[in-house]
Length: 285
Image (tube, rainbow, N blue to C red; front, top):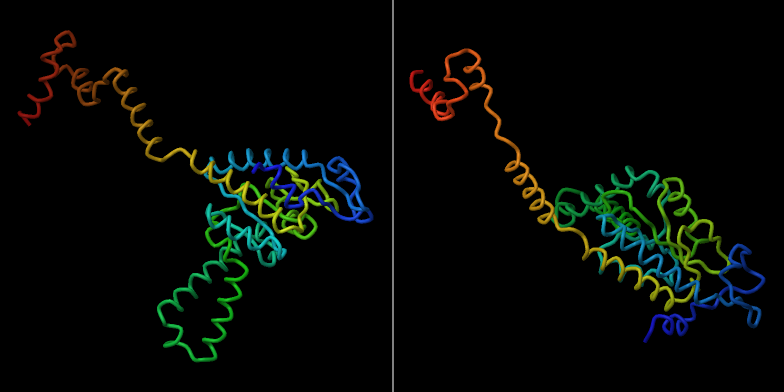
């Protein structure tokens, strides 16, 4: 089945009611049927193709893409597909400062690693009272629930994929302040100004969200396969260095030049004696 047929069957072309729309989404609307806006499927396909090309280029440069979708319809799809391509994601509440105050978020992640070590080693039961154990367990569950998706994100992402612009406005504002490009699935009630690459479509349908996230993650997987291997780069560098060393002329050592200036070494016109001069001097020493 083609991508267009899948999107149509998933209902990605159904927008919001005519009374609940953003006029800025006018270029992406095909018409109105039963007081409901119908999204132009050509614009949806165009947005998906542009987003796939862009994300593949980002991942090829060994950079990460952050997926953000805290609404119930998007959580399962984002978690499933992002884990397959090993990309960070946020499916619970967006904590303010995940991007603009990333240093503090990394400290909370280090705290999560400490609590994991306590639980796995069993020290939480032997070294702490039951009351303290309960407090640490609740703290571990809270941090793990909110930040488990970005646990492997050691630096700021190079791009962000957002489901439902209106719901994830805080994430989009942080990305805009930092100059991080955004790819957004936007319904007819959203503002396309917050998206660098808009994908007009129904952001309330689980099937449509799953198809869009699946296609974007497939492009990320292809981008990972086209990453240059570290071994290839080192071998090319070694080959270039060896080639340069073979073409460059051999330079006389400073010690031999010093002895030639001093007059203790043979004249430069006798290369055979010049090579044996340092050896003879070493033997006398």
